[in-house]
Length: 374
Ligand SMILES: O=C(O)CCC(=O)C(=O)O
Ligand SMILES: [Fe+2]
Image 1 (cartoon, rainbow, N blue to C red):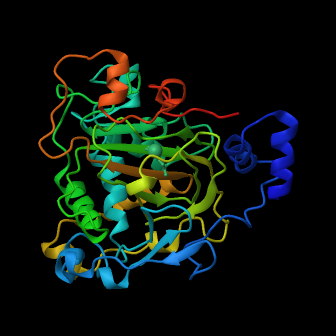
Image 2: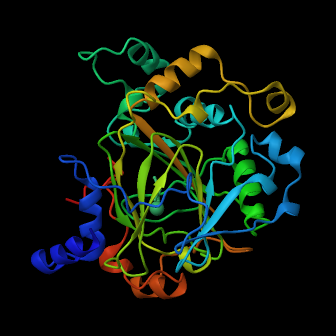
Image 3: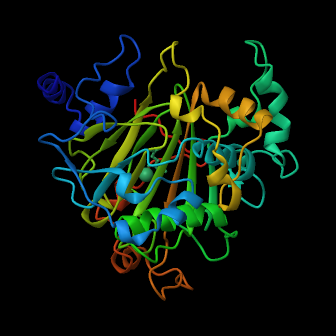
């Protein structure tokens, strides 16, 4: 397969990342996924290493309160050639993923958070997206118009990412959700980053035909803190490339409950999501999502049980969707946003932006959040 891809690079003058992206984006015939790393099955091989996390960073009780298994039981991996990249294969306790899915669909799209629908709809129209969508989703028939929830593509939290200027600013901010901050802080601490502050979040909502173009997340002013990524629902192929946009990527499945940490020299690597993989008819939802929360996690913890009615809507939505939350610390210790805009050249230097930010800045449209790379 790699040979064929190399030939395609030569034929079309296309770079290696784009060739691999298009390979996995293809629908008919479906691509061969045999080269995609599957951390849910992999123990260790020449590309994948089990990695020890900091067991002492998080007590079993605190992990449980956030819906996580004890850190000693997490299956965490690193990848040959990608120092600072950590893949944690679904560390969530049975039942707790439902809570985060419900937050992404019902709570986080609420005002004052910002979403793609705000770009062309009035604030009253984009209020109560959940309430306006649930009837449509529950009685979903082929001719039903798409609900607002099904049109949702992204939500921003905390410092709201500006897709046009590719910046965050002090004056476009709303309080970061306490529950997601706590989850992020715990995961970051286990990965060796105690004191992580969740300051900005981008939630991406993928339908079965969605993809996310090749980009690097460099708008945060401090890159010494990791970028955390949480996935729920349908499985995606994630491509992790290099420091140059053209560098050939490594493909891996990202399944429901999986967490990815990009830190150190992997913090500024190009990456993309070329496709969402259709679920087998026999198992339309990953089994780990079907469980209700046990009493012990829900009672005093951060996360609460999801009602049957709420889960009916969430699970219907997830039959054809994937939700991803990325959490970022924007500012370093004691750092503030620059008060006046410096000259363009000075921005690139002073904030340590990636050298290719000029031509190859994150390619996404403010309305859709997605860039089709075809
Ligand atoms: O959906 C994903 O796994 C990736 C999302 C992402 O790269 C981003 O939000 O910057
Ligand atoms: Fe990203």
